[in-house]
Image 1 (tube, rainbow over the protein chains, first blue to last red):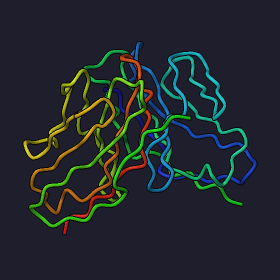
Image 2: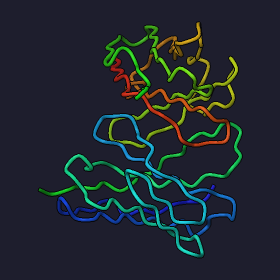
Image 3: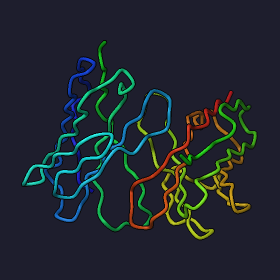
Length: 112
Length: 114
């Protein structure tokens, strides 16, 4: 499984964009990048995923570099409710059970 | 929007007692999971379940643990003889598609073993 590296913590001002980086330099050509978040004491929440192309949904945008060795999750207008731990997870397209393997993530603090 | 529910939200039990944690996955989902998170630590995979059998289990999921889908809606995790180190948040998750890591998590059950 490809290893991911994320900064332990970040902060941003409310209303500004939050850009959360993730390094996955050992990613294989067919592995997907998934992002989840965990608001304090709640269950993890799926945000977005991608393979090569940039992706956008109602929650966030995912930018994957051309060499796929890193990615950035963008929350375009962060709110206080976006304060959470954000996890970048790399997974193969086929797995015995499609389990998620969580790392330590990035603790994002959105300041008023 | 459909959601995964878990009961109870908090369970306190004495060491050696059996506990059953309950989950109601999203109704049309077919794949079910249990994860746990010890306070201050990472979320850890315990077990996955599909078609009434375990697909995969982690090293944590030893003989003291079992899972069951007793009817068409509930998914349970049983710990036969709890230990102090079983104290954690236990999260149930489900997903619809086989080839997807897009899982929907419940709010968790906080298990405290005294």
